[in-house]
Image (cartoon, rainbow, N blue to C red; front, top):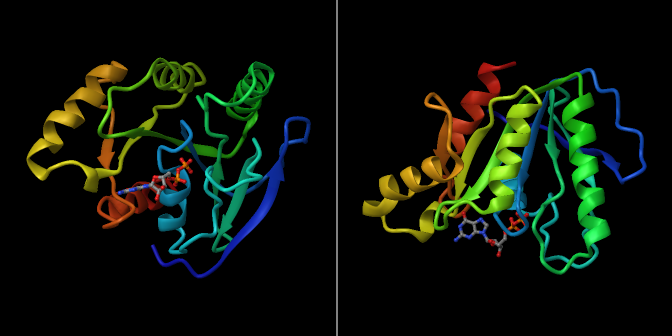
Length: 193
Ligand code: GDP
């Protein structure tokens, strides 16, 4: 995919009205630190356009990035961050739920899982939640460069089984360092436009 133009068009807080977009949306979910900003930056061909959760002041928002005036990447708030208060976590859940339930233009939901670790309880909940809302999540197994090449299949299997994935569910190993997997993700996005 050739990225010509990227624009952070809408930032939604807990009480904001969600935008009534008319372009297809592709959403990204995952726990904090999983590599979501790095992935979105890679898919935008930008170094640091999407803010990372380690940057101070990153709030729990839903960010809509207009890509080429043709589609949106939707950055959902990262979950499972131990330091945030319970009430914030509840708000986080409500925000994601509201978005998944109400978006008219959502085409695909990507759920990011760190390839090194077994999916957490929150990862499983998110996975089931996406399915409950009528979508087939595409799993992106992040930080691929952090494991030995000979271990990739074993870890993919661990993620697949840990989530209890559907048989035909897609899982794409990805590295923001090497950009391995990026073309496969772009192909999926372009294929569903
Ligand atoms: P977010 O909280 O999900 O948005 O995660 P970030 O994109 O901010 O990434 C969290 C940390 O993991 C940062 O220090 C990144 O540099 C690092 N990181 C993210 N993706 C990768 C990757 O594919 N490979 C490696 N080695 N590090 C990564």
